[in-house]
Amino acid sequence: MPEVVSTNDKGLKGIAYQNIVALLIEAMKEQDKKITQLQSAMDTCCTKISGNKIMDPDNNAPNEQGQSESVLQIELANKNNIVLYQNEPNPFNGSTVIRYFIPENITNGAYVVFYDMYGKEVNKLEIKDKGFGKIEANTENLASGIYSYSIIVNDKTIDTKKMLKSK
Image (tube, rainbow, N blue to C red; front, top):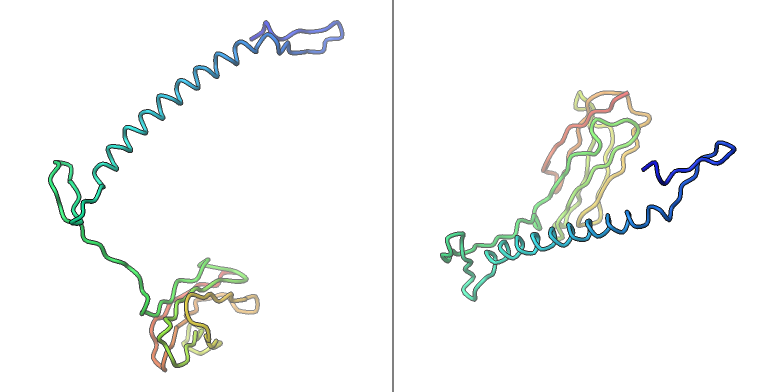
């Protein structure tokens, strides 16, 4: 818009903002109109989607053809299972985090044991708290290579993961 730019006698450029106000107002009106159209389309779309999800008292929902279909629900939780997660990051350099879950019903000791690539125990950590937890492992004094760690409960190895220490 060259008509809003002016040059003074010293060669400095300036903008006449009052000359672009009307243009900005028109642009905002167009933008508001588009937002209203998109909001209307989204409302229509969401109504159609949620309309297929309305549950009746018998736990049945209408399918795409309008027929009733039963809905089964399941909770996918490992409340009673011991879980050992993959360390993050992997590969790592300097430090890594290992997350785990120990259920409340575990009465005896739980340990995470770290091994080098030859199966030699490097370190052992007792886990006293139940529930979700994490181990922050400082590996600055550890040589580069492949290591493994296992979660052991009641003298039984539950799970083992591998991790890679990079340079």
